[in-house]
Length: 370
Image 1 (cartoon, rainbow, N blue to C red):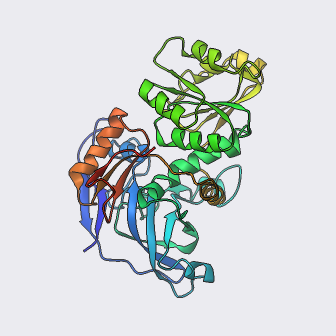
Image 2 (image 1 turned 180 degrees about the vertical axis):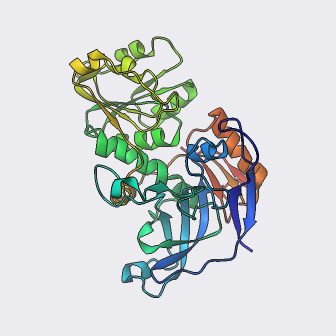
Image 3 (image 1 turned 60 degrees about the vertical axis):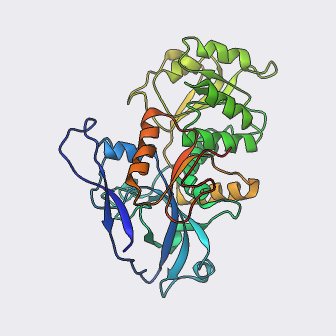
């Protein structure tokens, strides 16, 4: 019987507990009138999955499958599915990682009442940590033909988050602009790097690891600095080109002191887009930022419309998401736990993927492909 990956509830306080992974056997579901049945080939982890296991994420479920990223093949259709959906039968698709946000550029419709990321969530009973999944026909897009299943699974959530932060929110995704992307090595930062480089942007990065900065430069970044250095902002200033010696925008996932660190480097009217706050839930705002007309914009995930646009850009540019490590088998709990340990320690450079069927090149585990 097909397997489903969930978590098991144990006693413990949020932030101190660590819910163990748990496998359930579930029958193959049947699609409703306008739904698709998809056999999943690969699924990927995100930091929210680690937060769910630590009970640091709202509205979690102990019965619904984990994971929001998935790549699979359409195997059956409901009786009322559109001709477009019929053209996807036996074809690979990517699943949208959220529900309740169709196209509004400002934010989820209906005041976010129906908005949620799938996977381990109480609001929606689906996740990609299972062998078969049923979704509404509008919740998939054809997978770009050049992507492997692991690469396809690595794209949806981080690709959508990076696309909205860089393209929809920064207003600076243009050739010749200077953009700082912080925390390179994480999935969103790497995807933002790939998108920006493909657009001709001059990308600068930060990381706690010089090796990750070197890899980012191999991918097209102009340069980078180690954020553990006390003067990293001053070091960054020396890297900026003489004909444009300022930053146009910052794409940040950490929060913390990013405003005070970059306000002197940003042009007047520059933009700081924050899609996460891993350092802490609050940030300082300075009078200098006010005087320079700096814009601070929050950004989270994106709409289904932005997802479609992002996937089409990946197809057009032949972008391959960076995969850090792949383990094979949804039932391989020890190896999947190892992926979570990589994430805890910040070891990954790219996405951590579970190959649900088949085997990646190189055997049972596959290293990063750059």
